[in-house]
Image (cartoon, rainbow, N blue to C red; front, top):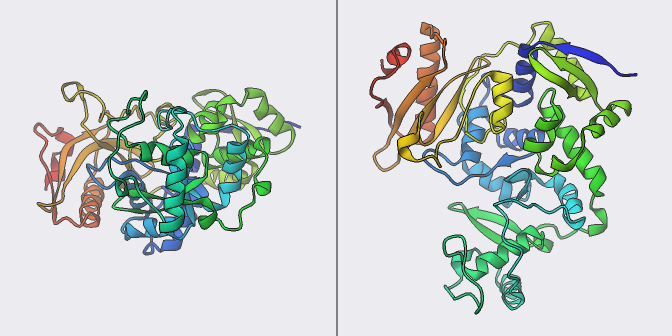
Length: 408
């Protein structure tokens, strides 16, 4: 029997924030176990190398937990509680999900995006050489190898990437090599059998089962989801799953059909979220967190979903020519008490020890109370101190009138 449930848009917002640990201000100091528990719950932590402020995976954890030692994330990778692979782009993924991704990989559902190397050239001689070096000497990064020319007939690509880097990436996408650890954010490749010595490919999850597991995780984490939200931007591997799959999961009792005020079409909810929905509709979860999000935080990484659910139209302008930018190079969405109220373009001047707020924009019709100003200023102070900087300054000319009080 199909169950039809109606949600208000605010119900969906609160559920999504709750599932993503973005509802309440932490009341206790973050512990290392909190970080891995959060990544397990979310399913992944997206990796990006931009560092106008802290790199995205570190920043995303700060957004959710506040002050914590960034080296904890490096330690979780080195302890093999996480591994790196493609969820929707390159991510840190809980190690217990390795059987799912290995099953998809063995079935030929390998990641195909701009992040993966061209399938040719193969360079088998270099592969064997690298395998022998890693086997004898331990983990290696591309900078451990001297520059050499590509074999005749091939052109270098991606701005001069070494053949060794190309080959190690190729073996990484085949899951023959894994990332043992990062040092200064450089990746050190290791043999899979040393990171997972007990692994047997017979333990890989069949692809149909793996796809179902990832899709159900996505729906659970989104509170409720359209097919597009779940299969396209949360997990990369869901792009080929038809709409009929969701109806089949409803018939099997693994999903529930819902409708959300203001969003066209049918959405789907994981049964695990039904108690949460009841609590939300009883008013038991009131948001109080103020924080700044990474552009790659799961709350906003699907720009279409962020627009539909939070009425927040967002674009990362790092790749937009400077003269065409509206908000700035690396604008961070501002989450305040359950609403995305604006964005700020920040830059950490690490040598000079200060944080520059180059631009600060509020959404239309946002009115800041004195309490809002206090909350935002406190969070800017936390943000600055976590970066080990001494002060923050807003340098934007013609700061919007509603935000002038932030300068103090």
